[in-house]
Length: 431
Image 1 (cartoon, helix red, strand yellow):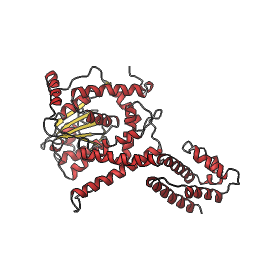
Image 2 (spheres, rainbow, N blue to C red):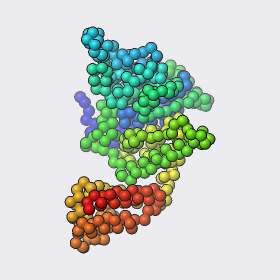
Image 3 (cartoon, rainbow, N blue to C red):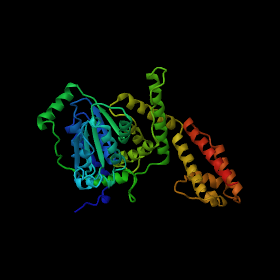
Image 4 (cartoon, rainbow, N blue to C red):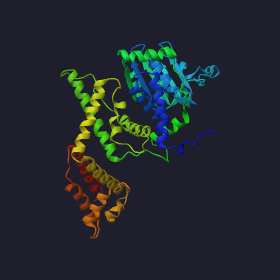
């Protein structure tokens, strides 16, 4: 009988995933950070790329992570130049091929399995890699006349090297999470690795208790905002804070690139796409949920380097931590978070008016949207509560609010200026 996971508390869900992660960390020594990153990839339904030199245990890590779950199948393949797409999608249907149609028998293929592990992914030829793109991104096999939804939830791929081409760049873009695993020569770590090898011969081990794959899918719907009954709250000021950190990190990465090339133009700049930035909100929810909370905090923003930096590359991780700490300290020191809350509540009010311009004919203090902060509502009420309300008066009220608002730091000043432009454009549209 299938369990009803809707009755589980977030704390109970968190305990299950923590027990599983602890078991993986016992088996794969000194890889706690990568295991946590992999868990986030699974909860958000994204893919993970592992890069390292030969013999560091990439395959063991991937296999042990997938063994955390019951009720899911894993597709496995060692990539090579000679392989064709049918290695991944199943053999071609000969009868269909006689009629000129490319149709794969997908049973047991990457399309038909919930998990996948591809070893040495960049040994695959470009033709095969191109064929994989739609399965990895759209979760759909699109080959010839065949369009089949893929069951694939998460792929972990391993590589000893990166091969740069137009196709491999597209493949890399499908891996939201990336990690470099460096050999650890510290004697005690090597001793612990040797202990595990003597016990299990370097093979993955079935944990004493597995997580049902159905629970992972349920948690995935919460982390990605698809569940209609349960959610992890991410307050507007936290979203704005996260975007500030991401922007500053992008600046720091490009500055580091310019310094590395000593005044010459870098071959390519560091760029964070809006899609990746938006997906990082799923990571905020996932980390909060994995810690048993139904609300994201500043701490979750500090973990966004799981997406924007390569775990295992200290320079990238430290740059993200610098961006996070700098923006956090700036907002804390100046009461910036409270000011962000007020301005974003004003933005929500402005959004309401843009959707329904008829609201301008009502007292703005009568609006009681959940996103309208008490402080802003009281200001509206105290400032114009007793007067007749006309459209012109409401316009003046909105302009006065921003005009009188004194930003405490540069980050807040930028938001105020953006809202002033948006308000001006809106007021012009109703003249």
